[in-house]
Length: 317
Image (tube, rainbow, N blue to C red; front, side):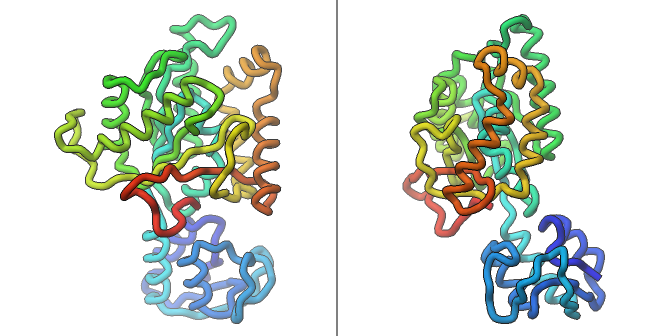
C-alpha cells in the first residue's frame, strides 16, 4: 500500500519504484486516479482545489483506497520527473540564500529538484572580533553545513567581502559555476537590494548567465546548451520589492530557519552589529509575504524578463 501523496514528491517516487510491477493499493483522499494525476500535472497541493471526484478530507486522515496498475504509477512518475529541475541559487554572502529563498529551495527539493548554491564572497568582513582569515574558514564551514542540511551542492567563489564587482574575472568564474551546475532556473538578488554586494550579485547573475552559453567565452568547461530562467529573490525586509510570484513555504519554514541557524557566527554578528534577531526577522518577513499570498508563510520573487528566457508556465514550486 502506498500513501499518496507522500510527505514529499521525491518520497512518493521512491515508494512507486518499490511497487513498480505490482498491483498497488493507494490510500488517498482522491476519488479517481485521473484526478490525482491531474493535480500532479498542475502542481497543485491536495485539498487546495475542490473538484468532482475529490473528497475534502486532508491527507493525514485520507481513507479512500484505490487499486491501480503499474502503468498509472509510471504515468505519475513521469509527471514528477518532468516537474523536477536543476536550480542554482546565487547569494553574495554566506547566509543570503538561506535568508531570502531557503524555503523555496526546500520546496524544490521535495519535488525532486537538484539544487546548487553559489556563494560569491568569502564573508571576511562580517564580524567585529574574529580576524578575516579565520572568519573565512568559519563562514565556509557554516555554508557547507547549511548546504549539506538542504542536500545541495555548494560552490564557493571566494571574492573579497564588500568588494564584489561585475568585472571580467568574476563574471568568468560565475559562468564556470553555471556551466558546471547546468541550471534550468537561477535565483539571485534583486538589483535594488540594500547592499552593494547584493546589487553586484544581481548584475553578475544576469551577465554570467548569458555568457555561460557562448562557445567562444572560455572558462574551462563547455558552454551550456540552454539558457536558464532568472528570478530575483526578495530584498532584506522587502524594501522596494514588489513580488510577481509567491511560493508557499508554510511547510518548509522550519527547515529554512534550521538551515539559517547553521550560520552561527552571523546570527551572533547581526545581533551585535545591527541589534536584530535574524531568525525572528526572517520569520516576520515570511509571514507578511504570506498575508499577501493568502497562506501562512511565503517567499516573494520577480522574473527577470529577457528575450528568449521567459517561461510559458510557472517554474517556481
